[in-house]
Length: 275
Image (cartoon, rainbow, N blue to C red; front, side, top):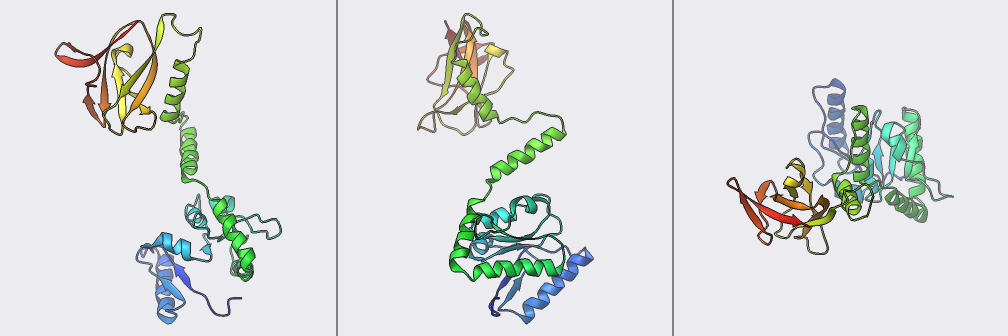
């Protein structure tokens, strides 16, 4: 199928303490020595130019016997590189057989972990490679099926919290909803409560608000507002009264110089009157 024109790049370090892994490493060195123009492997190190390899490869090959999740296939997909993989774990869920008629799929699978099934999957891949238009469509489809790793991380974290019988939440999302809710009228709110917006305009990455309005118990995160990244705010609903508060800016306590201040028991805080 390839007419003898093929180059294989093999990545990933070997564990020489494991007999099987050590034997694989020795065989890699042997093949690299005998077929220097067709085979490259460095079992003593990781790829130093992994993204370039993903972009330049015609196919990513992942014949893993076990793969609980798998991230490497996504690194291939985002480069538009289709994958040949054994149907196991996360590979089974993310690598799908290419169908030239429907234009669906992102690679090629083999069902049984043996030499014959693996070779047959590779032959199907090379057959598509011989058709430039078909192969071009396959690469586009592979790119289109890339899963955002933030979604993967969210799914894994959610599962770990489920196993521990805990609730997992995105604090920024909760804060957005709290701010939106604080501005809406409701019979559940204290009748004399008011919508109050606290702003920080002096820069910083992680800004939190803490105040006497809840007994100094909570750290309220401030979110960016508008086009100016230095301006961050949080909206709360507070009963009528006088409250002291302070900001945590990247782990350090700070006062807003553009807001009123008050000295109490030797401590200076910002001050707000809600009326």
